[in-house]
Image 1 (cartoon, rainbow, N blue to C red):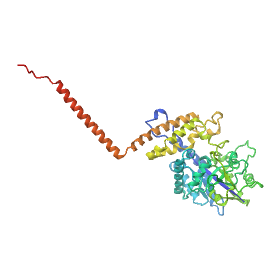
Image 2: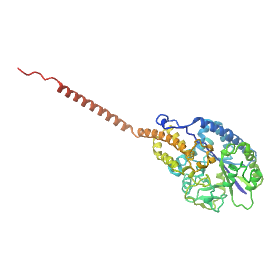
Image 3: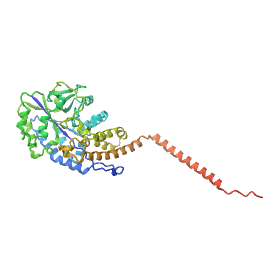
Image 4: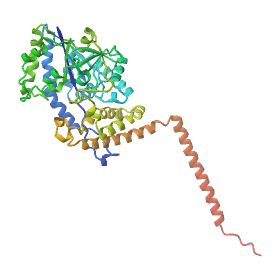
Length: 442
């Protein structure tokens, strides 16, 4: 019997408002509230609420062995609380079924793992604590932003105590090997790796409504036949995808909800398939080998690398400027500035600056609020420059200790007093010289 592991990523970034050079130093609010609210409400109505309702019915069904997993970014949870509390409540209802696992990730859906271990660890710990507070689960499996993984990143995750991590089953990493087995981190083999079967995942996430696809239309029976294909080696088929696939990327009119409604039942009827959560997969299967990956890779685009976020000079300049400010932000520890620090780290901002698709008008522009990557860069850097100025001002203020402040005041007072005495003395000398001499003649 093969195991099916279904995982959904839930994330929505905060969109920045149009922030011009002339706003700097005057306006310190950077978010486009109307767009953030309207987009989240739209996705909630099309995807989160109807899909959560569908899942809840399936998971509550008597005797159902269906199970799924999620990771929800801290930034998304913040917006649920602000714009759509019923969405958060619907996820909590799923958690109460005992058949849904919530994974850890970076709080800000950030790229911190590519430059700063301390920031990465801090964000993961914050996110894990948030998940425990909201859903009553302490995550034991980790999913990095955009499935970014390398040997080193995996070793950090293992050191934090996670038993498994999700990654992409990229061809250039696996070669002839199959993604349908469990692997282990090359540095710390205690960390098990669950690799996405990108072919079967993308059949749902990207090709489902493509009428030019040779397998269209994709029916439940056809898909289950693929899952149970004889002679295909493997222990587990990992189906990882964005949750927005349902109702947003693939509209309800395509039949995507009906497909997901009948998939679990048909799969279980075969008696050849079972559904497990990522932690259950890690507990059941032993790694067949270690996976050697010295360079970071992801689930994005054909290249499966990180060039979607750090592939040009614009992205790299913005990225390095941001993380050069980290120590000052943490030293200041101002709640308002911390919030800005969180949403400025979100990977989407760097994705908007990508030039690799700009020339051919790729589908990546669908969720991009900017007309060009250069506009995205300029707007981001205007916001960042004002934010950095505010951080520097607060940092300079915080770096003056109370004793230093007292000494500075006393020094200033002494200097003022000394200047006043000097001025008084000079005035008396001037008056004395200017006074008329008495006539001493006889």
